[in-house]
Image (cartoon, rainbow over all chains, first blue to last red; front, side):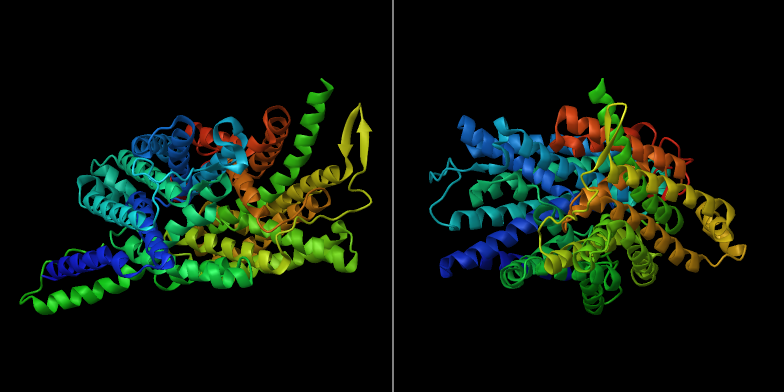
Length: 332
Length: 295
């Protein structure tokens, strides 16, 4: 019952979001929504390995690989970004394979560390390999508005593109979460040994999860770079923007849940932009101080994220409505 | 030939400092069993402290160790008391997030208070060097190596012969049994974190005469320390020392013959290779590795 209600609310919100560009002409509003959608998709993609308890702090690497793949193909070889999507996904997945090497034997902190190192290494390579990446100057996407070039006069098309991406990626994670893979991952997250004893190939599950996650993140990277026109290694591979931010959204919303990343991205993106504009201009770095505090406090006081606060409320409602106690699907 | 010897020596000297920083990490991880992602920020803080003591009071970097070390011991002690202790029973993910949060916090506080400039201390001996068999040895690097070696030997003896050292080793071995034997585990956690931070801080102090400090300097040292600890083996002091030297040499050769920009790529390759081939490290006995999935 409660789920039906949620679908209705979801459909309503979606319709509302479709209409927003028709009423708001302000580029700031559109940009903010576009960013929220991008981060929702990115956080949802980040969250796929997190179903299995794997915490990545290096998703900027996949994001950057995808962005570079698309931009290089388009600028140097004139390949339409729509075709570039396949390359962005494939190359990012290749990156995911490299990062999955330590996963064969490791979990926990060392995977996290390897993911940070991986993004750092890619940043170094992108700066160093000038003939391909144009070094630290980066690559500019020429402004030639056309659908084939994924370049548009107004911000509206990208509003819809990013909205579509967010919906598709969240739906994908939802499907993954309730597939065999999702259950394997959840088993691995709660007790790796026990899962193995029951015949779950947890290493394979972690691997497949990372493949999905990296490929999706690569595609998002491509769209992002065509949205902002510029690509430079320091920004695209930065720890703050595309590695820490999705992780932060995920943990604050609720890591390893389907809706946690959505809630996290919707709350944290405007907050992040606000902090960057107001605090960041007063004092460089102040916004990240706030972030650090929010992170430590969230982990201390609501370790399950905001979803864990909402879940009991929803459960209670559904229990009230049902005549007998419903067989509750666990909130996670 | 001369060039190779030269590169080897400077690598070894640098490796001594890496070993010192990593031993702090290894001690903290071995005893408290927490992976501290803010480890490099401890190096950063101690470097800044040394820098400011020199800037305002003209204190020699080596002398300032007398102030920096106790301060950083207290910092580690309080860090354990107020940040780590409350989350000890939570999942690994929560611990990672907490220390990552602290790392972000410290980095940006440093940025706010001291700006993003690269700062370095100029001393009379910063540029001085001695020549042995046509190999030029920088004096501050040699001092750093000597001090690192001495403090590692000191730590080794401390752990081996004193009551507290034995208690710490007992905790590393099995903290529940240690508790049953009457060791007050929580108190020793505080002490271990303080001590580990102090050794790390010494590494920071020794770096100041020949390298610059800036708010994000810690990331590199966190990475280096983890690679060294993994390579040398968790819980192995001598392993950490040798691995530190090794990484120093690798960095030195990589920087000279491949590309200075790619040294981190080389670390990363070694890191992954070791984890794949011998996850308990070259000298580790696999103690304390169950938390990170090595067993």
